[in-house]
Length: 285
Image (cartoon, rainbow, N blue to C red; front, side, top):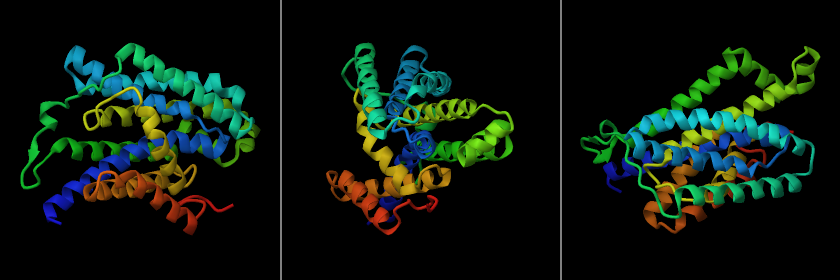
C-alpha cells in the first residue's frame, strides 16, 4: 500500500474508533455498574448530529451546534436517568425491551422533525484545509484531537474534581458512598448526563463524515456494544483502546473490500473475547 494512502486509512480508522469510544463511554459505565442495557442512549448520538446540522443551516456555524448539542444532551441525559430509575434492579431482558422501545420512539420523532433523507453537514472552512502531501482534510485530524482531548478531560475530571470522585466512589463501592452521607442517585445522574453529552459530541463530530439520517442510532448500536465488551466494562481507557482497535479494523478492511468492514469488526471482537472474556482492560471477577 502507498504510505500516504496507508496514513489516510489509518487516520480515518482513528476517527471512527474514537467516535465509537465517545458514544460507548456512557453505556460502559451504566452497564458495568447498574446492569442496564440502555439502548436509548444511542439517541443522543443521533441528536448531536442533527443539532449540528440544524445549527449549520440556521447560523452557518458548526461549532455552535457542537456546544448546543453537548449542553442539550447533558440536560436530557439527566432527565432520562430520572425516568429510567424504575429499571434499576430489573432483569437485563426487561431493561433491553423498555429502552429498545424508547429508541424506536425517538427514531420516529427524528423522522417527524427532520425527515427521512440524509442531511449534508459541512465543517468550517478552516477545518477543510487540505494537508500538504497527505491529500486529506484537516477536519479528520481535528476530530481525532477533539476526541482525545475529551477523554483526557474526563480522566482529569474523575481524578481531580469532587463530582468526579463521587462517580468513581459509586462505581467502586456505592455502599461506602452512602456511609458518608452522599446519595448514590447523584452519581447515577451525573453518569447519565456526562455519557449522553459525550454521545452527542461524538454524533456532532461524526456528522460531516457520515451524513445524519434517521436510523443512524440503530446502525451504531452493534458497534457501540462491540467497543464496550472489547475494552472492558466501566474502563475509560479500555473503551478508548477498544474503539481504536475496532475503528482501525473497520477502516483497513473497508479499504480492501467495503462489505468486509462489519464482518471484520465483529470477528475481531470475537477473537479478543475468546482470549480475554472480561475485555482488554476490564477487571477480572
